[in-house]
Picture 1 (tube, rainbow, N blue to C red):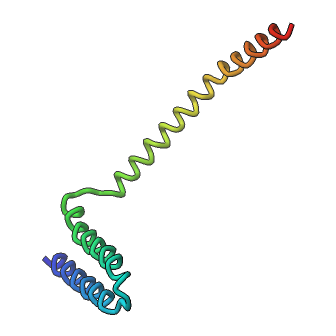
Picture 2 (picture 1 turned 60 degrees about the horizontal axis):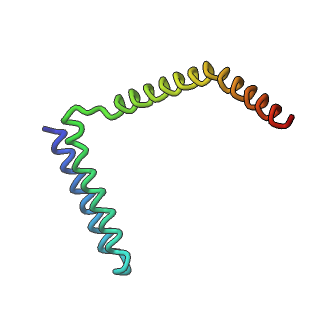
Length: 103
């Protein structure tokens, strides 16, 4: 219950800060852009508890993603090293073919 009260206090503080910033904006031409950005900030702030409550641990997901990415990259590098002989064979055959055409 104390976490909910703390979250509401943070939200009210953020909302008052956003309202103050919008009130102090000197020109109306930038007020629309600023309002959009600040409203998106409020939406993200509202989504934060839902992410925590749902049990999504974004840090673990990012670690898994990066780990699988690096494993895949290492696998691809090994495959490329294994197939390097094909490149040299292709280059040699290409050189032979160009030499034959020149003669």
